[in-house]
Length: 315
Image (cartoon, rainbow, N blue to C red):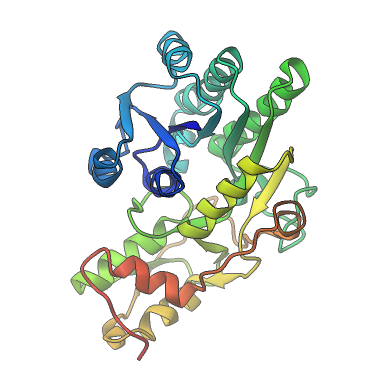
């Protein structure tokens, strides 16, 4: 089958592209390379994937591309992921994350795509949730335009299903980390800490370090995407570990690695508006997708560090 991956030169997208090629799919990547990197696709392009440098905000270009490719599967990962940028310019965030999603859905529907998997977000949608780990039926309380825009994208997926019969599903990711991660978005602290660890720099903790996140390895997120495209489930599905990890816990996980005794953070003032606790209940993913995370944090850190010049063992 032919699959289009928007944002396929990015962190999660490029890992998904590799997995699709491994499965024997014909893969077409759509990315404007504003944050994605062509180098992330070096192996994929050598193995037959194609890259179209295009912006999801360009509806005419998308429709022409989809009409030419006629994809059966569409994975929509292209997004503006910087929460602080969304606060500074909400309209620009909405153009990419709302209008861009509408354009992808419309192009997929017009081209006769069989299935669209939309990359949504967990923590940024739920905000300061009363229930942690947080299930999908918890109130949506975004604290930034980024979360609001991604939630709107979910609504448009459901609308295109009702209006046009387009098969869609929205995966609400926890804090994804792993090889090729850029220090942006909700899970960027691990990318930053990996850089500090590998280069011997001092990491910074904002606030007291008690804030928690649900760190989920990118390979597990890719596996959830592959399951989601195979099954006719719809709606919103959390993709996370269900395990809260504080920033202080994360520091200790790095310190447990060989050479980690030198990993000593400094503290800086807390960042305004930061969610204090974020963790996803993934029971629906287990029930509907048969999916469970396989990579524990310690192993995920080792795999990630191996790609930035360090491959420590547990000390």
